[in-house]
Length: 490
Image (cartoon, rainbow, N blue to C red; front, side, top):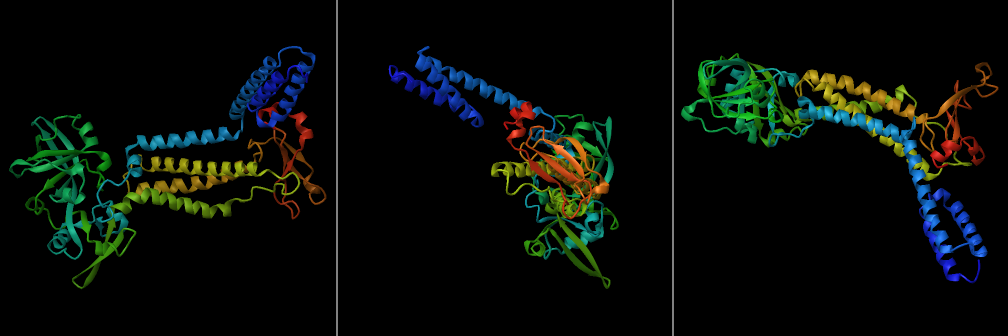
Protein backbone atom coordinates (compact mmCIF):
# COMPACT_ATOMS: atom_id res chain seq x y z
CA UNK A 1 0.00 0.00 0.00
CA UNK A 2 1.05 3.61 -0.45
CA UNK A 3 3.11 5.09 2.39
CA UNK A 4 1.38 8.48 1.94
CA UNK A 5 -1.75 7.25 3.65
CA UNK A 6 -0.49 5.06 6.51
CA UNK A 7 -3.10 6.13 9.04
CA UNK A 8 -6.02 5.83 6.60
CA UNK A 9 -4.88 2.40 5.43
CA UNK A 10 -4.51 1.12 9.00
CA UNK A 11 -7.97 2.40 9.92
CA UNK A 12 -9.42 0.82 6.77
CA UNK A 13 -7.87 -2.55 7.62
CA UNK A 14 -9.35 -2.29 11.11
CA UNK A 15 -12.83 -1.69 9.63
CA UNK A 16 -12.38 -4.63 7.24
CA UNK A 17 -11.42 -6.92 10.11
CA UNK A 18 -14.40 -5.70 12.17
CA UNK A 19 -16.76 -6.32 9.24
CA UNK A 20 -15.41 -9.84 8.84
CA UNK A 21 -16.90 -10.82 12.20
CA UNK A 22 -20.36 -10.25 10.74
CA UNK A 23 -19.70 -12.81 7.99
CA UNK A 24 -20.62 -16.48 8.60
CA UNK A 25 -17.57 -18.38 9.84
CA UNK A 26 -17.48 -20.68 6.82
CA UNK A 27 -17.04 -17.74 4.40
CA UNK A 28 -15.01 -15.40 6.62
CA UNK A 29 -11.52 -16.19 5.29
CA UNK A 30 -12.61 -15.91 1.67
CA UNK A 31 -14.26 -12.52 2.12
CA UNK A 32 -11.34 -11.20 4.18
CA UNK A 33 -8.97 -12.03 1.32
CA UNK A 34 -11.30 -10.37 -1.19
CA UNK A 35 -11.67 -7.15 0.82
CA UNK A 36 -7.92 -6.89 1.55
CA UNK A 37 -7.08 -7.35 -2.14
CA UNK A 38 -9.53 -4.61 -3.17
CA UNK A 39 -8.29 -2.32 -0.38
CA UNK A 40 -4.70 -2.82 -1.48
CA UNK A 41 -5.66 -1.97 -5.04
CA UNK A 42 -7.46 1.22 -3.93
CA UNK A 43 -4.49 2.34 -1.82
CA UNK A 44 -1.94 1.77 -4.55
CA UNK A 45 -3.89 3.54 -7.28
CA UNK A 46 -5.21 6.20 -4.88
CA UNK A 47 -8.64 5.58 -6.41
CA UNK A 48 -10.43 6.96 -3.37
CA UNK A 49 -10.51 7.25 0.36
CA UNK A 50 -9.53 3.84 1.86
CA UNK A 51 -11.65 4.40 4.97
CA UNK A 52 -14.76 5.21 2.96
CA UNK A 53 -14.10 2.23 0.73
CA UNK A 54 -13.69 -0.14 3.72
CA UNK A 55 -17.10 0.89 5.09
CA UNK A 56 -18.62 -0.91 2.14
CA UNK A 57 -17.45 -4.15 3.74
CA UNK A 58 -20.11 -3.68 6.44
CA UNK A 59 -22.80 -3.51 3.76
CA UNK A 60 -21.47 -6.70 2.16
CA UNK A 61 -21.38 -8.45 5.54
CA UNK A 62 -24.93 -7.32 6.31
CA UNK A 63 -26.27 -8.76 3.07
CA UNK A 64 -24.33 -11.99 3.59
CA UNK A 65 -25.86 -12.36 7.05
CA UNK A 66 -29.34 -11.55 5.67
CA UNK A 67 -28.95 -14.16 2.95
CA UNK A 68 -27.79 -16.65 5.54
CA UNK A 69 -30.91 -15.99 7.64
CA UNK A 70 -33.11 -16.34 4.56
CA UNK A 71 -31.42 -19.64 3.70
CA UNK A 72 -31.97 -20.90 7.23
CA UNK A 73 -35.65 -19.97 6.98
CA UNK A 74 -35.87 -21.89 3.74
CA UNK A 75 -34.13 -24.81 5.40
CA UNK A 76 -36.77 -24.88 8.15
CA UNK A 77 -39.57 -24.81 5.58
CA UNK A 78 -37.86 -27.32 3.30
CA UNK A 79 -39.49 -30.71 3.05
CA UNK A 80 -37.92 -33.19 5.42
CA UNK A 81 -35.92 -30.68 7.46
CA UNK A 82 -35.05 -31.51 11.07
CA UNK A 83 -36.43 -28.27 12.47
CA UNK A 84 -39.69 -28.75 10.57
CA UNK A 85 -40.00 -32.27 11.99
CA UNK A 86 -39.49 -31.03 15.56
CA UNK A 87 -41.96 -28.19 15.06
CA UNK A 88 -44.62 -30.62 13.79
CA UNK A 89 -44.08 -32.95 16.74
CA UNK A 90 -44.11 -30.00 19.13
CA UNK A 91 -47.44 -28.82 17.74
CA UNK A 92 -48.95 -32.29 18.22
CA UNK A 93 -47.68 -32.35 21.81
CA UNK A 94 -49.08 -28.86 22.45
CA UNK A 95 -52.47 -29.88 21.01
CA UNK A 96 -52.48 -32.94 23.28
CA UNK A 97 -51.73 -30.76 26.31
CA UNK A 98 -54.53 -28.36 25.37
CA UNK A 99 -56.92 -31.32 24.98
CA UNK A 100 -56.01 -32.50 28.49
CA UNK A 101 -56.55 -29.01 29.88
CA UNK A 102 -59.86 -28.58 28.04
CA UNK A 103 -61.39 -31.95 29.03
CA UNK A 104 -62.35 -31.92 32.74
CA UNK A 105 -61.64 -35.62 33.31
CA UNK A 106 -58.20 -35.47 31.71
CA UNK A 107 -57.40 -32.28 33.61
CA UNK A 108 -58.25 -34.01 36.88
CA UNK A 109 -56.04 -36.96 35.89
CA UNK A 110 -53.07 -34.61 35.50
CA UNK A 111 -53.87 -32.28 38.37
CA UNK A 112 -52.21 -32.43 41.77
CA UNK A 113 -53.72 -34.19 44.74
CA UNK A 114 -56.40 -32.04 46.37
CA UNK A 115 -56.88 -33.68 49.77
CA UNK A 116 -54.48 -33.23 52.66
CA UNK A 117 -52.23 -36.24 53.28
CA UNK A 118 -53.85 -38.37 50.55
CA UNK A 119 -51.43 -41.20 51.28
CA UNK A 120 -53.11 -41.71 54.66
CA UNK A 121 -56.65 -41.21 53.29
CA UNK A 122 -57.93 -44.59 52.09
CA UNK A 123 -61.01 -46.13 50.58
CA UNK A 124 -61.88 -49.57 51.96
CA UNK A 125 -62.79 -52.29 49.48
CA UNK A 126 -63.90 -55.90 49.79
CA UNK A 127 -63.15 -56.61 46.12
CA UNK A 128 -59.61 -55.33 45.51
CA UNK A 129 -59.09 -52.31 43.28
CA UNK A 130 -62.38 -52.92 41.44
CA UNK A 131 -64.21 -52.37 44.73
CA UNK A 132 -63.02 -48.76 44.85
CA UNK A 133 -65.29 -47.87 41.92
CA UNK A 134 -68.45 -49.73 42.97
CA UNK A 135 -70.16 -49.88 46.40
CA UNK A 136 -68.58 -52.89 48.13
CA UNK A 137 -68.88 -52.21 51.88
CA UNK A 138 -72.11 -53.08 53.65
CA UNK A 139 -73.70 -50.86 56.26
CA UNK A 140 -73.26 -53.67 58.79
CA UNK A 141 -69.48 -53.67 58.24
CA UNK A 142 -69.38 -49.91 58.70
CA UNK A 143 -71.32 -50.10 61.97
CA UNK A 144 -69.02 -52.80 63.34
CA UNK A 145 -65.87 -50.88 62.41
CA UNK A 146 -67.28 -47.68 63.87
CA UNK A 147 -67.63 -49.24 67.32
CA UNK A 148 -64.01 -50.42 67.51
CA UNK A 149 -61.51 -48.91 65.08
CA UNK A 150 -58.92 -47.46 67.42
CA UNK A 151 -56.25 -49.94 66.27
CA UNK A 152 -56.85 -49.27 62.56
CA UNK A 153 -58.46 -45.91 61.83
CA UNK A 154 -58.41 -42.48 63.36
CA UNK A 155 -61.59 -41.52 61.49
CA UNK A 156 -64.16 -43.46 59.48
CA UNK A 157 -66.98 -42.25 57.18
CA UNK A 158 -69.56 -43.86 54.94
CA UNK A 159 -71.63 -42.79 51.94
CA UNK A 160 -74.10 -44.58 49.69
CA UNK A 161 -74.95 -43.45 46.12
CA UNK A 162 -78.67 -43.03 45.46
CA UNK A 163 -80.94 -41.07 43.15
CA UNK A 164 -83.10 -38.39 44.72
CA UNK A 165 -85.33 -35.45 43.89
CA UNK A 166 -84.41 -31.92 44.92
CA UNK A 167 -87.29 -29.43 45.00
CA UNK A 168 -86.60 -25.69 44.74
CA UNK A 169 -89.26 -23.28 45.99
CA UNK A 170 -91.87 -26.03 45.57
CA UNK A 171 -92.06 -25.44 41.82
CA UNK A 172 -89.02 -26.94 40.12
CA UNK A 173 -87.87 -30.49 40.83
CA UNK A 174 -84.39 -31.69 39.87
CA UNK A 175 -83.44 -35.37 39.71
CA UNK A 176 -79.88 -35.83 40.96
CA UNK A 177 -77.55 -38.75 41.54
CA UNK A 178 -76.43 -38.05 45.09
CA UNK A 179 -74.87 -39.81 48.05
CA UNK A 180 -76.16 -40.20 51.58
CA UNK A 181 -73.07 -39.56 53.69
CA UNK A 182 -72.14 -39.55 57.35
CA UNK A 183 -71.63 -36.15 58.92
CA UNK A 184 -67.87 -36.62 59.44
CA UNK A 185 -67.03 -37.13 55.76
CA UNK A 186 -66.14 -33.44 55.13
CA UNK A 187 -63.83 -33.47 58.16
CA UNK A 188 -62.05 -36.60 56.94
CA UNK A 189 -61.43 -35.10 53.49
CA UNK A 190 -59.89 -31.99 55.10
CA UNK A 191 -60.35 -29.77 52.07
CA UNK A 192 -61.40 -26.13 52.10
CA UNK A 193 -63.98 -26.82 49.41
CA UNK A 194 -65.93 -29.08 51.78
CA UNK A 195 -66.30 -26.59 54.61
CA UNK A 196 -69.98 -25.94 55.17
CA UNK A 197 -71.95 -23.10 56.71
CA UNK A 198 -73.57 -23.88 60.07
CA UNK A 199 -77.05 -25.29 59.57
CA UNK A 200 -79.92 -23.99 61.67
CA UNK A 201 -82.11 -26.46 63.49
CA UNK A 202 -79.90 -29.46 62.68
CA UNK A 203 -81.12 -29.59 59.08
CA UNK A 204 -79.31 -31.82 56.63
CA UNK A 205 -76.63 -30.24 54.45
CA UNK A 206 -76.34 -30.68 50.68
CA UNK A 207 -73.07 -30.17 48.79
CA UNK A 208 -73.51 -29.64 45.04
CA UNK A 209 -70.91 -30.31 42.37
CA UNK A 210 -70.04 -27.25 40.29
CA UNK A 211 -70.93 -28.95 36.98
CA UNK A 212 -74.36 -29.81 38.43
CA UNK A 213 -74.72 -26.25 39.75
CA UNK A 214 -74.24 -24.99 36.18
CA UNK A 215 -76.39 -27.60 34.42
CA UNK A 216 -79.17 -28.35 36.91
CA UNK A 217 -79.40 -25.10 38.88
CA UNK A 218 -78.66 -22.61 36.05
CA UNK A 219 -75.62 -21.23 37.93
CA UNK A 220 -77.80 -19.59 40.56
CA UNK A 221 -75.43 -17.24 42.49
CA UNK A 222 -77.64 -17.30 45.57
CA UNK A 223 -77.99 -21.06 45.78
CA UNK A 224 -75.65 -21.50 48.77
CA UNK A 225 -77.65 -21.08 51.98
CA UNK A 226 -81.04 -21.81 50.40
CA UNK A 227 -83.34 -24.39 51.95
CA UNK A 228 -84.51 -27.10 49.57
CA UNK A 229 -86.55 -30.27 49.89
CA UNK A 230 -84.75 -33.57 49.30
CA UNK A 231 -87.23 -36.44 49.02
CA UNK A 232 -89.66 -34.44 51.13
CA UNK A 233 -87.18 -33.63 53.89
CA UNK A 234 -85.68 -30.14 54.31
CA UNK A 235 -81.97 -29.55 53.63
CA UNK A 236 -79.77 -26.52 53.24
CA UNK A 237 -77.34 -25.98 50.35
CA UNK A 238 -74.04 -25.99 52.25
CA UNK A 239 -71.59 -25.35 49.43
CA UNK A 240 -70.60 -25.77 45.80
CA UNK A 241 -67.53 -27.98 45.29
CA UNK A 242 -65.30 -27.51 42.20
CA UNK A 243 -65.06 -30.56 39.94
CA UNK A 244 -61.27 -30.69 40.37
CA UNK A 245 -61.75 -31.26 44.12
CA UNK A 246 -64.60 -33.75 43.75
CA UNK A 247 -62.56 -36.96 43.79
CA UNK A 248 -65.05 -39.32 45.45
CA UNK A 249 -65.87 -42.51 43.48
CA UNK A 250 -69.46 -43.09 42.48
CA UNK A 251 -70.13 -40.35 39.93
CA UNK A 252 -72.46 -38.36 42.20
CA UNK A 253 -73.58 -34.81 41.49
CA UNK A 254 -74.44 -33.99 45.11
CA UNK A 255 -73.60 -35.14 48.62
CA UNK A 256 -76.27 -35.14 51.35
CA UNK A 257 -74.80 -35.04 54.87
CA UNK A 258 -76.87 -36.91 57.47
CA UNK A 259 -76.37 -37.60 61.15
CA UNK A 260 -76.01 -41.04 62.71
CA UNK A 261 -79.72 -41.31 63.44
CA UNK A 262 -80.76 -40.69 59.87
CA UNK A 263 -77.98 -42.85 58.44
CA UNK A 264 -78.84 -45.62 60.88
CA UNK A 265 -82.21 -46.07 59.16
CA UNK A 266 -80.42 -47.78 56.27
CA UNK A 267 -80.59 -51.62 56.32
CA UNK A 268 -77.45 -53.55 57.19
CA UNK A 269 -77.25 -55.01 53.68
CA UNK A 270 -77.12 -51.57 52.02
CA UNK A 271 -73.77 -51.19 50.27
CA UNK A 272 -71.72 -48.06 49.87
CA UNK A 273 -68.20 -46.64 50.15
CA UNK A 274 -66.13 -46.44 53.32
CA UNK A 275 -63.52 -43.65 53.62
CA UNK A 276 -61.04 -43.70 56.50
CA UNK A 277 -57.89 -42.14 57.87
CA UNK A 278 -55.40 -44.90 58.62
CA UNK A 279 -53.07 -44.76 61.53
CA UNK A 280 -49.50 -44.17 60.35
CA UNK A 281 -48.30 -47.37 62.02
CA UNK A 282 -50.72 -49.39 59.87
CA UNK A 283 -50.06 -47.57 56.60
CA UNK A 284 -46.28 -47.86 57.05
CA UNK A 285 -46.58 -51.59 56.30
CA UNK A 286 -47.02 -50.79 52.59
CA UNK A 287 -45.33 -47.77 51.05
CA UNK A 288 -47.21 -48.21 47.78
CA UNK A 289 -50.46 -47.09 49.39
CA UNK A 290 -52.14 -50.48 49.52
CA UNK A 291 -52.57 -52.55 52.67
CA UNK A 292 -54.93 -55.28 53.85
CA UNK A 293 -56.93 -55.77 57.03
CA UNK A 294 -58.33 -59.11 58.18
CA UNK A 295 -61.33 -59.86 60.37
CA UNK A 296 -62.53 -63.17 61.76
CA UNK A 297 -66.30 -63.66 61.73
CA UNK A 298 -68.13 -66.92 62.37
CA UNK A 299 -64.97 -68.92 61.92
CA UNK A 300 -64.15 -67.29 58.56
CA UNK A 301 -61.39 -64.77 57.88
CA UNK A 302 -62.50 -61.79 55.78
CA UNK A 303 -60.01 -59.64 53.91
CA UNK A 304 -60.52 -55.95 53.13
CA UNK A 305 -58.19 -53.76 51.08
CA UNK A 306 -57.30 -50.22 52.12
CA UNK A 307 -56.28 -48.32 48.98
CA UNK A 308 -54.99 -44.80 49.46
CA UNK A 309 -56.27 -41.85 47.43
CA UNK A 310 -52.65 -41.04 46.56
CA UNK A 311 -52.40 -44.42 44.82
CA UNK A 312 -55.63 -43.78 42.91
CA UNK A 313 -54.54 -40.24 41.92
CA UNK A 314 -51.19 -41.53 40.67
CA UNK A 315 -52.73 -44.27 38.53
CA UNK A 316 -52.82 -42.33 35.22
CA UNK A 317 -49.16 -41.29 35.45
CA UNK A 318 -47.99 -44.61 36.91
CA UNK A 319 -49.83 -46.58 34.24
CA UNK A 320 -48.31 -44.48 31.48
CA UNK A 321 -44.78 -45.00 32.81
CA UNK A 322 -45.50 -48.73 32.99
CA UNK A 323 -46.62 -48.66 29.33
CA UNK A 324 -43.47 -46.68 28.48
CA UNK A 325 -41.24 -49.24 30.20
CA UNK A 326 -43.07 -52.10 28.49
CA UNK A 327 -42.68 -50.45 25.08
CA UNK A 328 -38.94 -49.93 25.63
CA UNK A 329 -38.56 -53.61 26.60
CA UNK A 330 -40.54 -54.82 23.58
CA UNK A 331 -38.87 -52.46 21.09
CA UNK A 332 -35.75 -54.61 20.43
CA UNK A 333 -38.01 -57.59 19.63
CA UNK A 334 -39.96 -55.68 16.97
CA UNK A 335 -37.29 -53.61 15.20
CA UNK A 336 -33.53 -53.32 14.83
CA UNK A 337 -31.98 -50.68 17.08
CA UNK A 338 -28.86 -50.03 14.99
CA UNK A 339 -28.94 -46.81 12.99
CA UNK A 340 -26.33 -47.99 10.47
CA UNK A 341 -22.59 -47.83 9.87
CA UNK A 342 -20.99 -44.42 9.63
CA UNK A 343 -17.35 -43.63 8.79
CA UNK A 344 -14.97 -44.00 11.71
CA UNK A 345 -11.58 -43.21 10.18
CA UNK A 346 -11.33 -41.49 6.84
CA UNK A 347 -13.91 -38.72 6.43
CA UNK A 348 -15.04 -39.14 10.04
CA UNK A 349 -18.02 -37.07 11.15
CA UNK A 350 -17.10 -34.14 13.33
CA UNK A 351 -17.95 -34.35 17.01
CA UNK A 352 -20.38 -31.41 16.84
CA UNK A 353 -22.26 -32.99 13.93
CA UNK A 354 -22.46 -36.35 15.69
CA UNK A 355 -23.64 -34.67 18.90
CA UNK A 356 -26.34 -32.76 17.02
CA UNK A 357 -27.54 -35.98 15.39
CA UNK A 358 -27.96 -37.72 18.75
CA UNK A 359 -29.64 -34.69 20.30
CA UNK A 360 -32.12 -34.67 17.42
CA UNK A 361 -32.94 -38.33 18.08
CA UNK A 362 -33.38 -37.58 21.79
CA UNK A 363 -35.65 -34.60 21.09
CA UNK A 364 -37.85 -36.69 18.80
CA UNK A 365 -38.11 -39.44 21.40
CA UNK A 366 -39.11 -37.00 24.14
CA UNK A 367 -41.72 -35.35 21.93
CA UNK A 368 -43.34 -38.63 20.84
CA UNK A 369 -43.53 -39.68 24.52
CA UNK A 370 -45.29 -36.41 25.37
CA UNK A 371 -47.64 -36.77 22.39
CA UNK A 372 -48.69 -40.30 23.31
CA UNK A 373 -48.91 -39.43 27.00
CA UNK A 374 -51.18 -36.40 26.56
CA UNK A 375 -53.43 -37.93 23.91
CA UNK A 376 -53.83 -41.29 25.69
CA UNK A 377 -54.85 -39.51 28.90
CA UNK A 378 -57.21 -37.22 27.00
CA UNK A 379 -58.84 -40.22 25.29
CA UNK A 380 -59.04 -42.37 28.43
CA UNK A 381 -60.39 -39.72 30.81
CA UNK A 382 -62.52 -37.65 28.45
CA UNK A 383 -65.72 -39.29 29.73
CA UNK A 384 -64.55 -41.74 32.43
CA UNK A 385 -63.70 -41.04 36.05
CA UNK A 386 -60.14 -40.97 37.33
CA UNK A 387 -59.17 -44.39 38.63
CA UNK A 388 -62.03 -46.29 37.00
CA UNK A 389 -61.24 -49.66 35.44
CA UNK A 390 -62.60 -48.56 32.05
CA UNK A 391 -60.35 -45.51 31.87
CA UNK A 392 -57.29 -47.53 32.92
CA UNK A 393 -57.97 -50.15 30.25
CA UNK A 394 -58.42 -47.47 27.58
CA UNK A 395 -55.21 -45.72 28.61
CA UNK A 396 -53.18 -48.93 28.64
CA UNK A 397 -54.73 -50.14 25.38
CA UNK A 398 -53.83 -46.93 23.58
CA UNK A 399 -50.54 -45.85 25.15
CA UNK A 400 -48.57 -49.10 24.83
CA UNK A 401 -49.09 -49.77 21.09
CA UNK A 402 -48.83 -46.06 20.32
CA UNK A 403 -45.48 -45.80 22.13
CA UNK A 404 -44.18 -48.94 20.44
CA UNK A 405 -45.04 -47.73 16.93
CA UNK A 406 -43.88 -44.19 17.75
CA UNK A 407 -40.43 -45.46 18.77
CA UNK A 408 -40.25 -47.58 15.62
CA UNK A 409 -41.09 -44.53 13.53
CA UNK A 410 -38.45 -42.50 15.37
CA UNK A 411 -35.73 -45.02 14.52
CA UNK A 412 -36.92 -45.41 10.94
CA UNK A 413 -36.98 -41.63 10.46
CA UNK A 414 -33.49 -41.30 11.95
CA UNK A 415 -32.09 -43.94 9.59
CA UNK A 416 -33.44 -42.08 6.58
CA UNK A 417 -31.76 -38.74 7.37
CA UNK A 418 -28.42 -37.25 6.45
CA UNK A 419 -26.16 -37.30 9.53
CA UNK A 420 -24.75 -33.86 8.62
CA UNK A 421 -27.77 -31.67 7.83
CA UNK A 422 -30.39 -34.05 9.34
CA UNK A 423 -32.55 -33.67 6.26
CA UNK A 424 -34.52 -36.60 4.84
CA UNK A 425 -32.69 -38.37 2.03
CA UNK A 426 -34.25 -38.48 -1.44
CA UNK A 427 -33.93 -39.83 -4.98
CA UNK A 428 -33.74 -43.57 -4.26
CA UNK A 429 -32.01 -45.66 -6.93
CA UNK A 430 -31.85 -49.45 -7.12
CA UNK A 431 -28.40 -50.89 -7.81
CA UNK A 432 -27.53 -54.47 -8.78
CA UNK A 433 -29.63 -57.61 -8.99
CA UNK A 434 -30.72 -59.92 -6.16
CA UNK A 435 -29.40 -62.93 -8.10
CA UNK A 436 -25.88 -61.45 -7.91
CA UNK A 437 -26.08 -60.53 -4.25
CA UNK A 438 -23.02 -62.62 -3.27
CA UNK A 439 -20.93 -61.42 -6.22
CA UNK A 440 -21.75 -57.71 -6.19
CA UNK A 441 -23.61 -55.22 -4.05
CA UNK A 442 -27.39 -55.13 -4.44
CA UNK A 443 -29.67 -52.64 -2.79
CA UNK A 444 -30.96 -49.05 -2.79
CA UNK A 445 -29.00 -45.81 -2.73
CA UNK A 446 -30.39 -42.62 -1.20
CA UNK A 447 -28.65 -39.29 -1.65
CA UNK A 448 -28.56 -36.11 0.40
CA UNK A 449 -29.91 -33.10 -1.51
CA UNK A 450 -27.14 -30.99 -0.05
CA UNK A 451 -24.44 -33.30 -1.38
CA UNK A 452 -23.19 -34.50 2.00
CA UNK A 453 -23.21 -38.19 1.11
CA UNK A 454 -24.97 -41.31 -0.11
CA UNK A 455 -26.73 -43.98 1.95
CA UNK A 456 -26.44 -47.63 0.84
CA UNK A 457 -29.22 -49.95 2.04
CA UNK A 458 -28.73 -53.66 1.16
CA UNK A 459 -31.61 -55.53 -0.46
CA UNK A 460 -30.69 -58.74 1.39
CA UNK A 461 -28.47 -58.52 4.48
CA UNK A 462 -25.32 -60.59 4.16
CA UNK A 463 -22.36 -61.33 6.41
CA UNK A 464 -20.30 -58.66 4.65
CA UNK A 465 -23.09 -56.08 4.26
CA UNK A 466 -25.71 -56.53 6.96
CA UNK A 467 -26.82 -52.97 7.65
CA UNK A 468 -27.03 -49.65 5.87
CA UNK A 469 -23.82 -47.67 5.30
CA UNK A 470 -23.16 -43.99 4.89
CA UNK A 471 -20.64 -42.72 2.33
CA UNK A 472 -19.45 -39.12 2.71
CA UNK A 473 -18.94 -37.10 -0.48
CA UNK A 474 -15.92 -34.80 -0.68
CA UNK A 475 -15.86 -31.16 -1.81
CA UNK A 476 -15.54 -32.12 -5.49
CA UNK A 477 -19.24 -33.02 -5.53
CA UNK A 478 -20.35 -29.57 -4.30
CA UNK A 479 -20.79 -28.22 -7.86
CA UNK A 480 -23.64 -30.69 -8.43
CA UNK A 481 -25.61 -29.28 -5.49
CA UNK A 482 -25.14 -25.49 -5.70
CA UNK A 483 -28.48 -24.36 -4.30
CA UNK A 484 -28.85 -26.91 -1.52
CA UNK A 485 -25.18 -26.63 -0.56
CA UNK A 486 -25.58 -22.90 0.01
CA UNK A 487 -28.86 -23.52 1.77
CA UNK A 488 -27.25 -25.78 4.39
CA UNK A 489 -23.93 -24.01 4.61
CA UNK A 490 -21.85 -26.83 3.08
